Length: 330
Image 1 (spheres, helix red, strand yellow):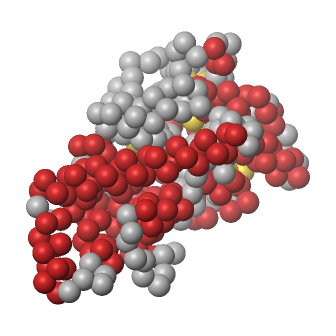
Image 2 (image 1 turned 30 degrees about the vertical axis):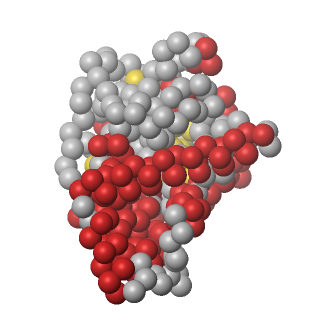
């Protein structure tokens, strides 16, 4: 585990509190639950976007929805442009004379130039995501996912930035971009919820739209690795690794197969997430019991008007993660 990456996340993360949804809890005892699987963004961690931060301003998704342009990426364009230049300045000025390099630095380091360059980064990144999504949909994949590192490598190549010998710069940049544009913080009682369920010998797992840096949130902000929280590697499913994003049921299907091999049937599995379409719908299609997390209005997704969830009803609606423990262990 790269300790530098953990330090970046810690240094750039700040405490947040949930914003009340005004929802009423819908609770009931869920007897004979043997496994509990969690979403991450908007569920175990407060997330300003409610999802992993590859949903970008102006990006139209497969469901026809479009992201607002009034997003942190736009507001932070100048900061992003300046920070990108700081990380890649030796490569940006490769082949220049010292005078040319210094001139380039001075130009990029002006506030206006940094903002323009940051906007260019955002646009290039968004366009590359759209291009990959289109290509995968043409191949028949309705809910495609990207590996953000591949996207940034393509963007860097498009900007004619010469790369160093390893990919550590790209990884670092991807993490800094995400932490700045989609700041997260542990949801209240997240640690306690996982600990109590694990102490009750329940099988615990993760199914999340996520990137390579997502598992690092746990040691960085909870001071515990997922393995320390009794979440085995075999029960961790991340969209960037399989190239499919929720609500594609693929990750849920794989988790169900793994649980069945251990003797746990779908009906005795609870999935906990903040999105009726991305979480509750595919989980219920597999036969999992479901809990909708209605803790933070920024991430709660009822998907009003979406016909795909017209008849979808979660088993639980929780406004605090401790409610999950009470319903499962009561």
